[in-house]
Structure formats: C-alpha cells, structure tokens
Length: 222
Image (cartoon, rainbow, N blue to C red):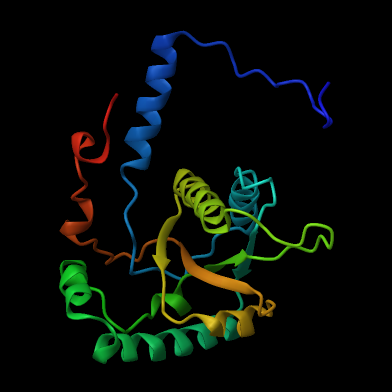
C-alpha cells in the first residue's frame, strides 16, 4: 500500500502521433525565434503577463517538490536605478580585469560591455533566487536546488516569449546587492536577472547569437 496520498492522473488530450509531431514542431518553430534583447523600450507590459509567467515557472518540477525558488518582479523606477548602478559597478570591475581573457574572447562576438541601460528602461526586471534552506523545520534543506531553479527559469522564459515579450538573462557577478534591493534573506542566492519588455525600435541582435549547434552535436541516441 502506498504511504503517500495520491491523486488520479489528469490525462492529456488524446492525439495521434502526427498531431503530437505537429505540436512539437510548432513549439520548436516558435521558441527557436527567441533571442536575447539588449535594447528595450519603456513601453509597459501588463502585470498580468508577468504573473502568468511566474505561475508557469512555479509549476516546474523540483527536487522533492521543495520548489526552492523565489522570483522578485521589479517595476519601480527607484529599485531599477539602484540595480543598474550596482550591476554596472560589478561589470566594470569584471571587464577591467576580473574576467579571464578566454571569457572576454568568448563574449566578444556578442558585443557585451559594462553599460546596462536596459536595466532602467525595460518595464520589468525579475530577480531569480535559489533557496538552499526551506521554512520547514522538520526538513529544512532543499534538494537539487540549482537544477530545479534552472528548469523553472526556462519555463519562465518560454512563457514570456510565447506572450511576445523580449527577454535577456543578465548575470552580474557578484549579485549580493540583489538580496538587499529585493529584501531577500541572506540564505537565498541570487542566480540571475531576467530583463523583460518590448524591444526598442532600433534593437539589434548579434549574428553570433543565432548560431545554434545542430542536433547531432547536442544529442546522442542509444
């Protein structure tokens, strides 16, 4: 007898193999158009879009279903300005000597640099935090934290893309300032910032960003 409560499986719609292939290929065609945007307009994005994307992220599987994530959605001008100042300071140190030469060579085709005006211009920033410890005193530790938060963030990005929202994953190092700005406990680790909004009229995307490895390089079949 099972030692846990269980619910009936909610069946997926009954589809033919051809219909499943078509759905998968349709999603592939849409998600393959996602690009990182580094020039945003200040055109508003409804809060309901962000809420739906966060709910989708919160549906992700996680180690022991601990759901070890926290997403801080930031729209306030003062908070965004504070984040930009702190992020650009870390980025200047990074590009001026903290970053190894091999890393700088790797990102050079993408045209990245220390100036991050999009952190203020875009209508939304979403700070992604990983929670190593839970509120459960009986089982205080979370499991597979990085993997779980990574899956949830991928769903978040896919949902925003499906809603026609441009995104950028920004990872200044270190990011302890995000705990302060977002009023998150020291035990949480800021993993990344998701910039979300509409692309600026003059937005460009580096050609190198569209060069994805072919299937035979990223998969094997046994």
